[in-house]
View (tube, rainbow, N blue to C red):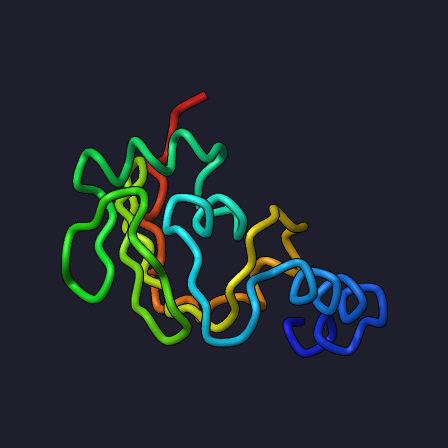
Length: 120
């Protein structure tokens, strides 16, 4: 399914627009802004709070919300009951749709834990 979305002209156009709005080549983006832009957190302030609380690590080190992120960095985010491990493929500054967001990182996260069966 991921290969289908990569060939979709609407997604390709959205990716091109996101890259155009992103920083010039060789520059960096704030970590709190990036995790919000690629939809790992719901709001930028939640991203900043996660950084301040020590729930975000870049290349194994705890970071502040203003930490500069670069392509190739490994980001670990502990949110709710799950740890997300992603490698940065693209830097963007503005929030994008989910099909575009998943093309901005490589997801190395372990599968989510199974939900407990609830009796009716």
